[in-house]
Length: 110
Length: 116
Image (cartoon, rainbow over all chains, first blue to last red; front, side, top):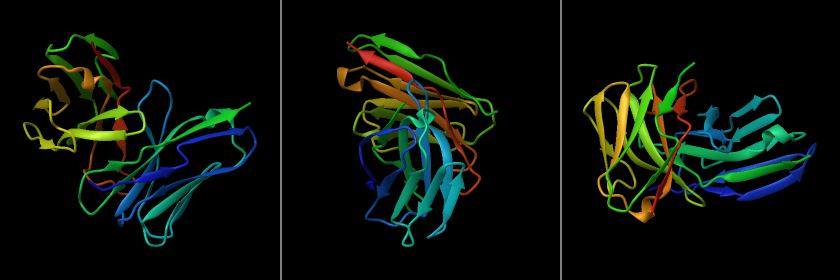
């Protein structure tokens, strides 16, 4: 089983601040996804990245796929309370099943 | 909108009971998945199915079985529930097995199972 490490595990910041969370593996991803999960709900897909070095933006969220396709980051600009949730990365290694990271639990303080 | 519906949101069962968790999707997706989610462990794949009557073991299949008699329905079965199966169970479906840009995996809202 491939391992995805997410850091930090917990993050609590003031509204309006910027933040970055990370997803790392020792293996190469064929593709990687980021999800957000709110309490009592299932994860919801935010983005899929496929190409090394790829950058995708979703409003205030910027997703970057590492050049070597072993890591990814999610940067949030001017965090809002609605960004609170569990952020999960999930990667495909070759043609195997999707493997999830352990998640970063983000709390935005008003 | 795609909808993945898990019939039971909260269940409390006794050790040794047989438990059925039902999942239905309305988008004619080929692939369906069952995960369990535990604090600090993320989502772990129990079983998945890429077609009717087909099933594949995930990372943690022990103690579980599945059934896919119809395309839209994927059931998770705990033959004899144990306390270490207390968890949040998530069902998901997707059109493609391998996620590429534009392919989405849709999750249900989850079923919280407590085994006492």
